[in-house]
Image (cartoon, rainbow, N blue to C red; front, top):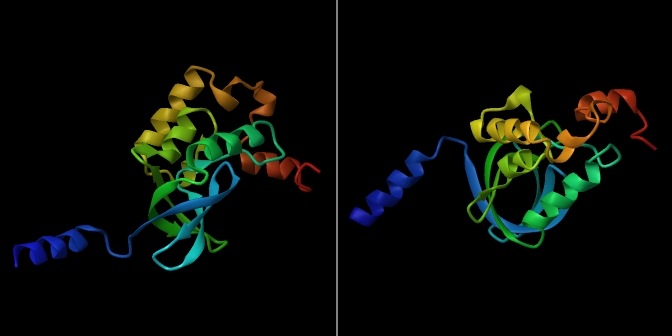
Length: 161
């Protein structure tokens, strides 16, 4: 009986509507989107990393950002804590590879901006601040090349092609 009670309390402690799942990353689309194969439901889910915004692939540091994410998660098991679903139907969540909080690691490496509009994670903000101070990753670019993705998209409506 105590084991059942402990299991029940575990489910009660998770916020209503929160989903946590594990799977293997089968593709890194860009610096903040991955495809995760979920054996629990026998399908692949697209996951947008919560709290960060990586450069578009065609903008400065876009390829480097995707490469950094690939090095962390490609073909590896991850745990996803779903926090939302975006306008494109993608799951939005915090991604963990082992003990590494991938979202925060990308910001700390200078491979993504903290996504101010929806940021609830202090670790991401702190990582971005360290990367900026130490001029890591995209923070080493000249200021005119260091445009947040929405600004870059406004200036390059054809995607930089």
